[in-house]
Every structure is written in structure tokens, then in C-alpha cells.
Image (cartoon, one colour):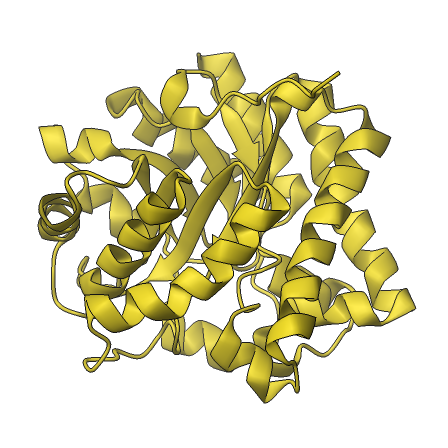
Length: 314
């Protein structure tokens, strides 16, 4: 008997939870080094693989406890060709690592007792280059060709959705959306914005979403915001049609700027209760938003508080 097809966020108004800042949790809560900020690489080490299972099991248990669907995400963020090559992976071995990530997700979902219809497996894509630097030479065509390799692996692994996180240029977003559409997999584009409430490539959220939609015939299923804080992206939102395309938030725990966060050398966990309240306030004015998780500095503690607050306010 085939497994039930999971509901996807753009098909319902139900609240979905996803994970937090896997990399910062692994580095600062469990003491692991992350070469090239690549969490997937830790699956090669038995001790760090146990920590990864602990991390995803904790989120899956939160979803079961709160009765929400859960989107397994993040681990393949840097499991693409250029980043993999820096760690010594061949094309074949990198594809195998992507598959191992999805196997881990499914194992954790089963152990937590998360129903199949509430288990969403996301193929997570990160930028081709540094998320905090602007790659002006990356055209939509180059981005499409590059990311199509990983998306083809996702398709072979049977993922439910492709989520591109921490994008800072519209050209890369366009390339990913086109590659996902050709592969026949729903895509999610998540932008990160700076303190000036713009992408590093200079567009406002409104301009970025409208540009990507126009260039791809509205290919992304929806948009998200990640690796920013509500004090920055909250004021950038508006009660306009373009903002209805944003259905998810994965905020940083801290409101510090990207450059400062990267140089701190310690974890900034912020105030989980305050962050949960900020999510509730944003959803009150943008009710189409229904995907909620965290980014740098957050973990399952933050996401449980966010989930409880949102469900109580619904």
C-alpha cells in the first residue's frame, strides 16, 4: 500500500512547523566543527550523526505533541556541487549524502510517530556562493544549470518540495524556480534581507517577489523569509497582494546584523517567548502565513514556543 501524500503548505491554511538553526545548534550546543558550514557532512561521523538524529527527533516530537505537520529541512543546504567539492565529494558521493539526509528525516518521522500525511520532506538548497555576499556574476541561467543537479537528486529521492533558503539575489531565485518547475517539484523561495530591509542585490521584498514571479510565470508555490529578524522584516511587509505570496518565516533568534552574528563566536539565543509573540503579531496581519520555524540561534525550544503561541492565537 502506498504512503498517503502529505499536505503541502500552499494547499491548506493549517499551521506547519519546520526546524531551526541546525548549524548553530550543532556548533554551539553540541560542540561540533562544521567545515564549510556543512551540516550534512556530519553524517559521516557516528557521534555527530547521533546529534543530528537528536536534533530532528526533538522537532518531530514537538510536531506530534502539538498536532501539526512538520517540514524536515535544512540538512542538504550545502550539499551541492561547489560546496561538496571543497569537502572532497565526487558527484556520486554527494548524491549519496543527499539521499542519506532524506533517510534520516524519514527515520525520525517514523520513530516519533509522525503521521505520513504530516511528514513533509524538503530538499533544501542554499546559495551557490556565500549567502552574505553578493554574487553579481550569477545569472539565472547559470543558477538554473547549477542547482538542477541537486534538484535532480531530490527528485530521485522522492522529496515533496524544494526549499531554497537564504537567497540574496533574484537571479538565483529565478534559476532555482525554473529548475524545480522543470523537475516537476513544487518550490519555495526564501529571501534574506539586510538592515535596510532589502536584499543584498538591492531589491525590496516587493520588487524581488514581483520580479521572480514575472520571470517564472509564478513558478514558486510560495515565498518565505529567513535568516533575518522580525524587527527588520516586519516593517518590510505590507497589506498588498505581493505580500500574500509570503507564507513562511524562519527568523534569527537575534536582531544583530549578519556580519556581527558571524563574528560573535558564541550563540545568541534571544528571547524565545518574545520571538513567538512577534510571529503571532505578524500572522495576525498576514493570515496566509502558515510555515514557521527558525534560523540562526534557534532550536526546538523556540519552535515549540512559536507553535504553541500561534495555535493558541488561531
